[in-house]
Every structure is written in C-alpha cells, then in structure tokens.
Length: 109
Image 1 (cartoon, helix red, strand yellow):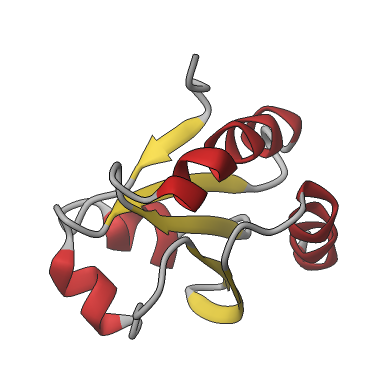
Image 2: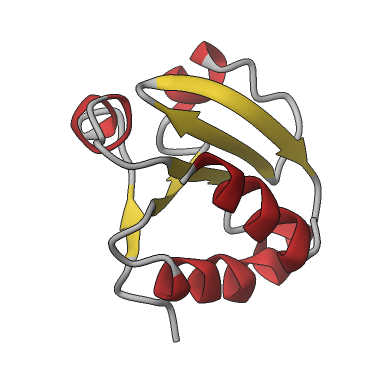
C-alpha cells in the first residue's frame, strides 16, 4: 500500500510543496505504465516514511503534469530530482537503489 507520507505533486501545488519547502524535497517523476517506476514505488514509500519531518517526498505523474516534466527536461522516467531551497540540486534517472537515494537525500538535510 502506498505511503500517506508521499505527496502527490501537481502543476497546481508544485510551487508550494517543492519550491517553497523549508526542507529538502525528493521528487519522483513517474507514470503508471512505466515498469521501473512501479518497481521504485515501494522504495519511494519507505524513504518518505523514514524521512518524515526531515525531508519531503513527492511523486509527479508525467502524463498528468506534462508542463512540469518539460520544465525540468524529463526525458526518461523514473527521474528523481532533489530540491533544496527551491532549486534542483541533483538528479538520478532509472530504477536506483534505496541506499543511493537515501544517501543523496541525507546529504541535503
């Protein structure tokens, strides 16, 4: 079951949830039809649950938020962007190991 700590990020709430966040944000650009995205889903949930209060974790469905995907030049998914102080500071593409994601996020906290 999906974690309640993962924020569904849309074009409408992107600025408030990501750009104006007081804590680092991990944004997973994904789509329901993407196999590697679905494989990464439980890892994203675990990280969200582990980082409550330290960082935010959100998901952007690229089919629903094409303008956001274009704004950040998302060409392949899953794409994981790390934001700090409203700026993208790091990016990973593909099904990445949980340890890699956690280490990158912890470096920003």
